[in-house]
Image (tube, rainbow, N blue to C red; front, side):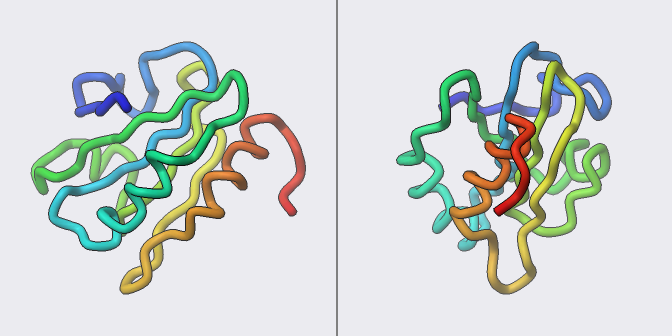
Length: 112
């Protein structure tokens, strides 16, 4: 799985075409470590790509660019523009179910 640093982003835009789910993760975060297994095993729907936004460095500009307060956080992009978001919950992290929810949002399907 590709790892993005702040160099792959143009401000708050992802410099890539298509539909992307970027999981903002930090190596030091136990909730990110727990989320990483399901993320790596998750088969994204056709046409959706998945990457990790590496915010391990607390000085990464991605924290501010995307107003990340809790990791893991998922951000969905369509042709570079943010179209959805799922923030982790402090002390709990993020459910792997959020990946399916984000994929439905990128497809334009209603939440279930």
